[in-house]
Image 1 (spheres, rainbow, N blue to C red):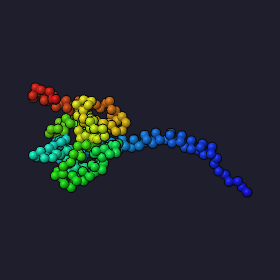
Image 2: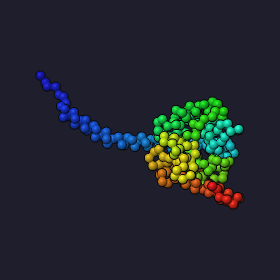
Image 3: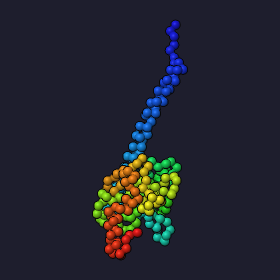
Image 4: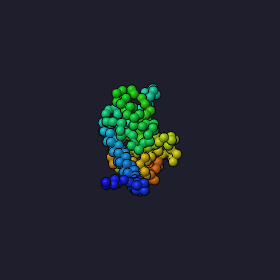
Length: 241
């Protein structure tokens, strides 16, 4: 009779060890590939938001939407995302949330999707703080008053929006604006993909800057902000604060 071939215990342990070694070699590459895919999705989100924003601006005689506006009588609020959702410039809630957002974070995909659908049905009657926690924040210096895009002399150097975070919250929730109150600002540029912050510029291009290259002060020092400060100084004799 022919003897049946089977693994010995030593051979089985050797096979398991080889599989473990291969897995340890492949997993870092797979993780890098996954993060790269998320980063690409983040870039696409920023491009879609930039395009939607420009559609709004074109239909609004060149005016940039306010980041935040209280409703008449102080009853409720309208965030910049609502300006894109209600008229239909933004087709889904997807671009409002970064794919690297932690699960369970306030403003997560499910919550934003629900708020998006309610906003779409009810228009500006719908009121929700959810849109205060989008993971992309607009430049607070250009979305706080009635600015026209024609006033931006160097759009390729002027930040429209970046990946954002409420720095005072542990769950990495996003922020609808980015500001320049220093390193401890509550509304900070933030990267959820390694060392690159996804940044959309007013000319339409999107970059992933290294974290040190895109500080809060970088937002303050964009050309359009400088131009506004100089104009303020000429007309009022006081620098912009």
